[in-house]
Image 1 (cartoon, helix red, strand yellow):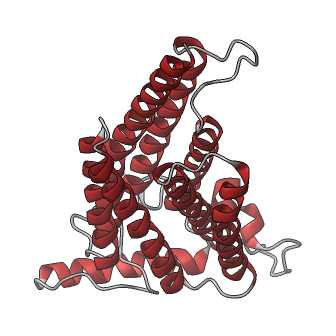
Image 2: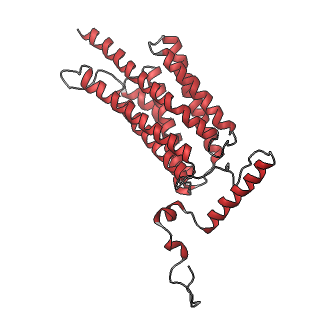
Length: 291
């Protein structure tokens, strides 16, 4: 906004924008970039050319105030599935399965670990939805950090459950080095360099390691839910490679990341189904021994 009398304004034009635009950092420069990018991509599409990246990212169309509407919606839906899974797991353990009479605690030895898993999962998917709605430096850091924390903890849970480690000393020995590495990685991303390539490599290695561990354990132990575990592990590995392949967008909204987010919805449902069945199996086995 420039006054008609030619005198400078007391405040920059940016402060007169709506709050949601200030929060999203949609200013003159970003708007010019976006509309020029869309016009160029329309020209390339008319010539039969494939999309190209701009500033390191694929050209995706906005919808209202959502920067990547499909990815944001899929992340929010996965968040709902994660919350529903964690809530049903909680209700199963404390209201449907028997509790220890002396302490009123659950018989399932991994209850606390799964509760922390659920909280970290919901936190990760919450920031994923925010990041895909509004891509700024801060939302990107929060998204990467929460995802790294969630995946690191998922690897800890995988090791503790598959190796059947129940004493505190063994759990600390497994968790300490992984927590130290993940914490260092998060600090590096936030306070030294937001290296997306490095973060992708770290998350890929952690994801594949835990999926292979779960699948191998399911086959060796012949767990009653082994088919669900193997399906989730296979789907997770495929999802990781799809995201690493970085598929170009189609129709302006669907890219490799959106496909991975869509795959995560049924996988999240099946994973919590396995957690509940595992709790039922272990509770039944322990109560039979105590009789």
